[in-house]
Amino acid sequence: MTIGITNDHRGVKMKEILTNYLEHMEYNIIDYGTKTEESVDFPDYAYKLGKAILTHEVDIGIAICGTGIGMSIALNKMKNIYCAKVSTPAEASLAKAHNNANAIAISEELPEELAKEIVKRFIDTPFSNINKYVRRNDKIKEIENE
View 1 (cartoon, helix red, strand yellow):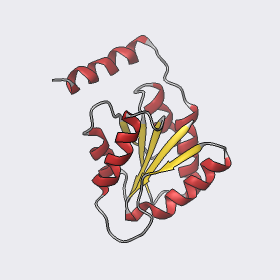
View 2 (spheres, rainbow, N blue to C red):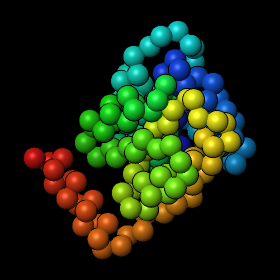
View 3 (cartoon, rainbow, N blue to C red):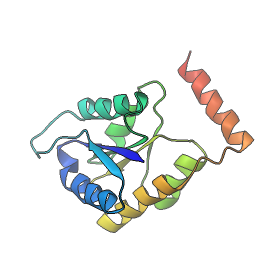
View 4 (cartoon, helix red, strand yellow):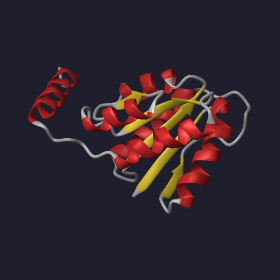
């Protein structure tokens, strides 16, 4: 599995932690984020990750900023990108199992071990493919296409 990871200036340290963690688990990681803590505009980096998901350069994405909210909003402006801003492992599982999210956004302020568990749960959880979730996700796509 290839995982894209992106960040703004506030997510540099967390990106490094998660990249090392994921590479240790033998995932292929592609970095779309900034490498410095000098202020940058998060939408630019969200867009890079979104494009990589849409072109199938990566299978899923992880976005990191101060709160995760800005990255999530920016990614969700892109058609066929479904990014959940998550704060717990349970939210990460549900984002994938129920909503078939292809990206998550997290806060750089999360404790290191919690961030790792969130990412692991997101990666390990498959889409449930239960009819009611398929139907609901199809309705989201209909809204997106209006």
